[in-house]
Image (cartoon, rainbow, N blue to C red; front, side, top):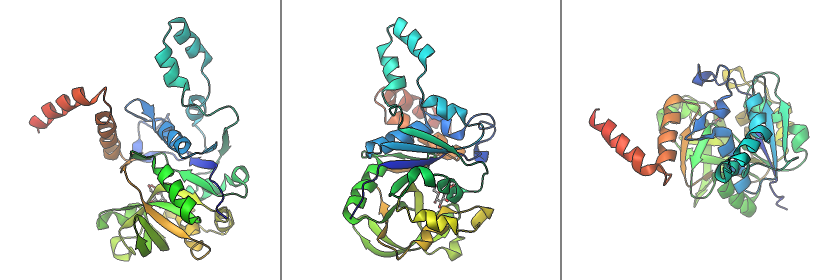
Length: 292
Ligand code: G1P
């Protein structure tokens, strides 16, 4: 039986050291691409995929995330007085309902696997999604929705997959591919951040996962791996053979917003995709390119 995906976990406890000094006093997940924080894109993507419960694994100094997903009565009062209906809509229309959001703290920065394990009690015994907000994906159909569609056909575990230049394997979890069919690739092995010479392919894991709850059992038995952190990839590698396990080569463009250049690229791409900004920004970019 293929059980529905109702819950999503958002690991947001990371220190964001790749983005200092911006992230000294501000969560990296609150960095805006155009006019929206990264974490809001991730939550909206999850909603578009039918997610009903949003679980944040947070940490110290991440209060702004909780405030962003809460009503702001003062601001609402002022906007109502000024009859700014469109702005009221911008701050409220995308909000999950009361009770749909929960928070737990990671307490120690021990890695992505550890962050996901912190959500064990809140997820319980059902399959769930994990979304990493700094992987931002511009797509016609939300990436997680594409994955849920694939999951509804085959079940098991599904991870977002993308081919990367071979010299970049050290930045990613990398898939050892089995059978390829259509956009799906069978996962027969997984390695976290291998050097190009050790990489089983150049098909990388992108930060979207649909996982069976047995992952928690494996996380309980996972030692620290690459970079001295408890790696989600290592626990996933132990799940191979338990049931179907696929990578989905999703349709869409992915931007690494944990990286300064990737973040700038995302801002330009997302702004160009907006009808209210495309024209003005194109003029600016054309002018700049003349000076290069
Ligand atoms: C994490 C995962 C890695 C994955 C990547 C995608 O790494 O550990 O397997 O490929 O996200 O962005 P991080 O970017 O947190 O180092």
